[in-house]
Image 1 (cartoon, rainbow, N blue to C red):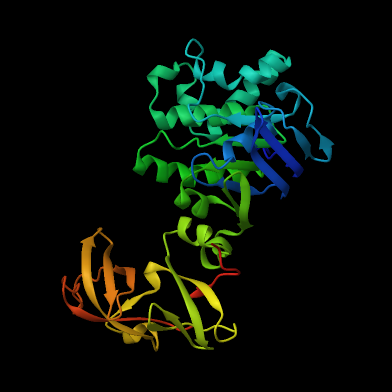
Image 2: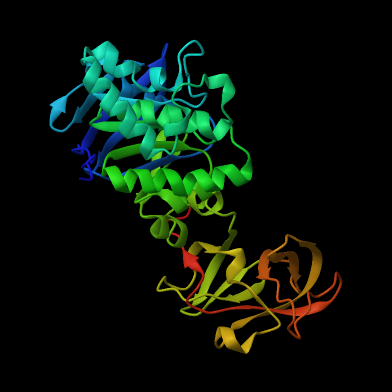
Length: 364
């Protein structure tokens, strides 16, 4: 009979949380709720407070204010070993003198589980991560990806209420990182556990998460599904961090045009004429030389300033006739009549009128 190894996921609620080192507060969070069984990514650049948040939830730093509850239980003042949380560290933190099985079962042994229970649970977790044949090996006999799986199995072995992951894929090469994204998400869905995943990699956050919380300067800038964060950013920071959009500041001319440095760009907006607006236009949303298959486009004329080939697509730096600079990302089309325009060539620069996203408010 197949065993049911699914965990009982817990919710996490954080309110009015402040964390500081000395007199400087490095994290200020009004509220954050993680649903049971949710995969939430905490995303942001270095120094934005994301690892500090994970450390506060895990009990490795003490907040100066606020509360953290897991499954309705206030854990704010509890020591880390009494919080019922699993943790996967960036450097894996495996014990070099223990075997793979010894590492996976370490938390169970500390907790006082009997030997039969430990061995059964370790076998389940090693099977889950595909390392049953490696139980007797030491960490230095494993590849980076295998060590990452051991750390994951160890974090899950204690049946945690929530699993915290601090950039666990950052030490892997690009190909293995892509593979582990899929495997980690599959494991999370198989167990149904709540996971809070810290990363600075936008692709990881977008491809793995139910929701993404983007942090900046110690505060939560925006939270939402990957599609919401990417397609409907609220601020210039979000738009730029999530895919390096073209960020345009202009003045509304009418409901279909904005003026950017004297260039009238087609943008649909309900803002009143004369209003200053920030607009995000994604690089992949730009069409060069009006591809009819993409629908009726609107746009301007310009010149190719730079171009580069990136395998699946071409990247262009374009300059409009009025001097507005735009970047575009166009899929390569081998075997078709299309060819990438060369530097210096005049091109049509267009997009669908409803594609540019007007941000909620103008930031300084």
